[in-house]
Image (cartoon, rainbow, N blue to C red; front, side, top):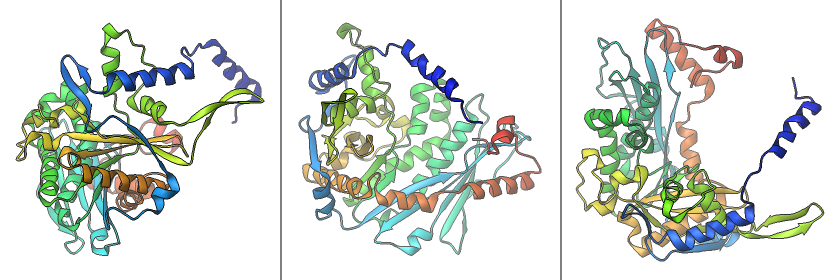
Length: 425
């Protein structure tokens, strides 16, 4: 049943009861203040958590010109992993399945055929056992593994999801690293942010991350991946389509002595205001913001040592994972791209091992700007990887039905699953 117009208007009138505080002009002005006064460097409790690699700068590039320029990297590879999402069964098992795939431009059919599949299993029944050895299928093109998660008081679904996703992705990346000769683009952050966030935001899971070999192995895979690419001189980046970091906003809010009122819920809101170009114009409805859409705007690269980026920073402990290069080489560095066509912000991450070199840094910047300009969004190479790795909804349903038969246990469904005819997340 659709919303009746009178009810729609009644709901809309509620907005008149809300004073949204500072107007947009003031927010833009405050963003400029943050840019000029706090980011070179950003310091918290005497520790630098964000600083520019080179000069702090905001730049623009003509969208058509960057799309038509000569490519900085002749070939490009993308990596992604898809899951069926955590599924609970009435016998107490909680399971997720992930598969990772790598794409290539120009296409490599053998590489596209290969998959790494991981099933993670959680149960509070300690008698449950899992054969965790790796196995091969599809004539040896692909391999798979099941992994048991120890009993956890909370977060079972989040843990099985994150471990399946990141173990499949990192294993596939290491297995096919030598196929990459110019540039690898990960669909998502450089390091397993979902795992690192546990210790940063959920102390209950800190011991699990420190003591259990499974998440440590996953983190080690990413560390070794950075080392391998650094030693071969082949850059890799992580392209974050929906950046939700809060390092800047949380730090600014903590500066009580500066008496700052930070209006943004995350860092993307701040960077969007900084990079959006345009001007206020008058029309029949009054003054409005007219956005410039012919360019892409972007920042310089920053070194990040706050929040979930701290463990891999120069003074982080990497949760006990041994690092064979100087610690600075692993630090997360990033720049952000703003695409005014869709009013969207993207974050590009890379290890400092590559961005410390001005030429490599510039080449990666231009390559990613070109990719966004051409694709009108995230780079085509990771869209291609997403298509290879994605497990479609009908396949998810079939896999869950197969698991029900194998375990002789039905899925633990809720009324909402029945109502919306959806599978549980």
